[in-house]
Image (cartoon, rainbow, N blue to C red; front, top):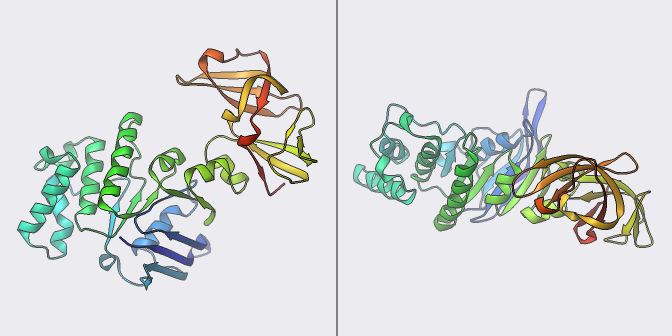
Length: 339
């Protein structure tokens, strides 16, 4: 295992700044997710750690060793890409053995290593198959086995589950967490899917416009977003304006207890599950409802014209057009420091 440190890393391509002064640490044996919209700099950050990009400014350290200008092949880094990038002219076993072969590992040893990994990933029966005949999930496992075959101290995964169906993705997420825990590998997991990152990663770094907006555990990022961007990107949020005074939040048409002692104009982040349909100080009219099996997502209009998204038990879900009272769980409310 190893600790990854990005020390004020900036990467420019001509006039474009892809990564802007990023300070980030991935702990020994940690799985750190990097999420953000397309073009936010998350893949460039991963490529910089891998050695495929050299920072314009700043340093990359593995443990306390500066590897900023160390070539990729000398970094002991395993890579799993969105496309899996398997060699079509090789069998599955030959794909897995390729990295160790390039590093001078003997044929018996690399064959033994490939066999162990294929068995560990439950695809030993595919060893002699052409990778083009495999399903997406099988290719994903082969790509992971090939990355692990070089026995890396660091594993970098770039959108590894894009294109997989929801059920398979959920199963592979669980298996990946168990595998990385067993192998004790430090991992950076890049994805645009915040739900995937929350399921897989110990902590999450949220990026936007080349900068890191927040780093924290999944519950910290979800329950206590650092700013409006994080609140909107990670999960669904209702952002409401209110005036905080004397321990209350005044929304103009309703009041609730304030979760802290802030005074003045504030922005309040309320997740859909923080509202409860029933007796409460908020009055709203249901405009839309979507049955999603485990819950109903409803959109309701408040008296001031703002709308809120609700997460409701199907057995208790109001109909479109219903006027409802909403109670707010103030323990689930987060007041942003920015107005």
